[in-house]
Each structure stands twice: as C-alpha cells, then as structure tokens.
Length: 461
Image 1: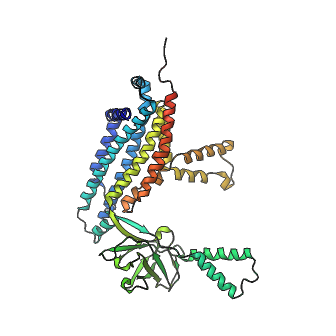
Image 2: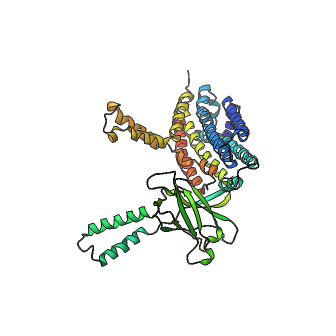
Image 3: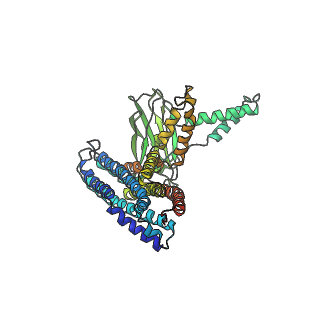
C-alpha cells in the first residue's frame, strides 16, 4: 500500500501542475461562484431559480470533471512512456499493477476534492438564494417543500386483479355462462378480465369514484404536518384545455379519527395538481385511503403513467440528497479514469483521448443511440438498406458497443436533487458496485496486464 499511496500523491501533484487541469478547475470554481447571481429560472418564482441553479451547477460540474478525468487518465501512463519518465518507476521493486492502482487513486482523490468543493459551493448558493425576497404567494413554501426538503413518492397499491378475475369467473360459472367453454377459453377469459381490471383501475367514470390505497408510509400521524397528493387527470380524447370537477374523500373508512372534510376542486386536465393532506389522515398502520370522485358528468378522467398519481411526504433535508448525487457522479468518474488508464497503457495520448471521448459520448446518450438505430433499421420499415451489405454488420457492431458501455443516464440523480425527490441509498450502492467494483476493476486488471506485458524500454547495444 505504501507504493500505491506514493504513486497516488505523485499523480495528484502532477495533475494540479498540468495546464489543462488548472483551466478546468478555474472554470469550475468560476462557474460555481457566478451561477447563483446570474441564473433566473422562470424569472418569477424563487423556487424555479433555485432549481435552475442546482441543475446547471451539477450538470456543468459533471461535464467538466468527466472531461478532466479523461484527459488526466489518458495522459497518466502514455506521457510517461513517451517522455521516458516511466523508467524511474518501473525500475523500482514496484509491481506494475500498483502503478496503475496508484494513478487511478490519485485521479479519484483529486476528483473527490473537487466534488467536495462543489458540495460546499452548491450548499452556499442554495443558502444564499433561499434568503432572497419573493413576491409570489406561496413561493417560499413551495421552495421549502419541493426543493429544500427530500420527498419520498409512494404509488397507490394496486388491487389483486387475479382475485377479482377469479371472482368474476366464479359468478359466470354459477350463471352457467361458461359451461360450453373449453379450459383454454376460460383461461383466455381470465386474462381478458385481468387486463380490463388493470386498465380500468386508474379510470373514474362520470359521477363515480374510486378508492386508492397508499401503504407503508413512514410518518408520525401525531405530528403537525402535511402529505401532498400529486395527480394529473387526463381527458380520454386527449384534450388539455378543459377542466374536471373532482372531490377528494381522505381517511380510513373504518377509522373516524382519520377522516377529513371532503375537498372539492376544479382541475385542468393534463396538468399536475398538488393537494396538502394532514398527517392525521394516515391510520396507525401507516396506510392512507383516498376516494377520488369525478363530480363532472361530462367525461371519464384517467390517471395515465406511474407518476400521474402519487403521495409525497418529506423525510429529510436536501444536503444528504446532494451528497448522494455527487457520490454517484464520483462512481461515473471512477469508470472513466479506469478506462482512460487502460487506453493509455497501449496507445498514445491523442488516440486514448479520442477513444475515451467516444466512450463518454456513448455513455451519456446510450438510450438515444439504441432508439436511433432501431428507427433506421430497414428491417422495421421494409425499405432497402441505405448502407447496402455493410448495414447489418455495422449496426451489430454499434449495438454491441452501446451495450458494452454503461448507460450514465441510469446513474444521473441531478433531476432528483433539483426536484427535491429522494435519491435512494441503493442507487449509490448500485453505482459503486457496477461502475467501480465491476467495470472499473475489469478495466484496471486489463490495464495492469497490458502494462505488465508491454515493453516500455528497448535495450540497445
């Protein structure tokens, strides 16, 4: 470990002396210092201004540190071999895998320090912006709930559609309506019933209501505070400029202490609505019941998508969320550093940089690239292949490369920080396990093997 630590300290010292590192660090610090004073958001609300500051700051830092990591890791070994300074290291009783590990550790220590500065700078920016005056009613409360507190979203628990289908089949059999139906036909009826129940569960016909149940709520109903029911009704015809009259009946039907006064409101369809609900509406088992009734007899309202109906409640402050976001970003940088070191062990600095820039681009847009390749695949359109016989092998190579490179969009929690949504700790563990312990370790072993077998010095007569 002493040799690895010595290489790491030397790598940090060399990195901060490089001009490219000085430029990137200066840009990062300048951006973090200026951003709170120039960002405007929607130009009206303080909440939007803070959200924009968080999104821009974290997005810009992620990009800058990714580029810096690529440059430093690609130059770490390649430049030493080109300048022949590696001779003074490999001639020592130091295993070459320790050289790779030390350089990776040095780069990641520098990244950790820069992310620590980002944590302090963003926290100071949010503290400054949160104390600015606002003239919009409810703006400061919205800022506190939607940004500065961490909210956990709970989806309604679906009923047992299979049990409902079995009950309906039992009724049909009692009425002798399935006596001439084969077993395969009964199974088809069962699947059709399950699909119909699932599709109709989130639909509320005119003049009717539907009860939704939210379970496993970690709240203290004895305290003063609010849950927030967030929903977005949609029109069956796709209209977005009509209003629906909705009544909410909150509370456990079997527990009078939880029942609240009905709330009637006019909602614009295809728009999110948020209704505060007292914590006392949750029963002692941590279950919240709400009956949503359509008081408008004009059309059926539907909640489409997983995020169209959820219950939100605060469970902490945003600082822990910010820390988890930066920790996930550190794991992404760890993968890039391992990849850059592996490339620098067998190609020159310019070639390694181009390769890692390609990896960075594909990692940041992997989902889009896969969809794009599907759209242009002539097999799905029936048209002639514009790339002739080269199309199928090239598309196969492209899909294989996209699948081999990790999708960074799965490890991007910036949106959760800006919207005050909880970043589950399991996200951080998954990023550390997949990007560092699996992908990073494989690349590190590959770099060590290549450097071990490579002839870094050629003896001369």
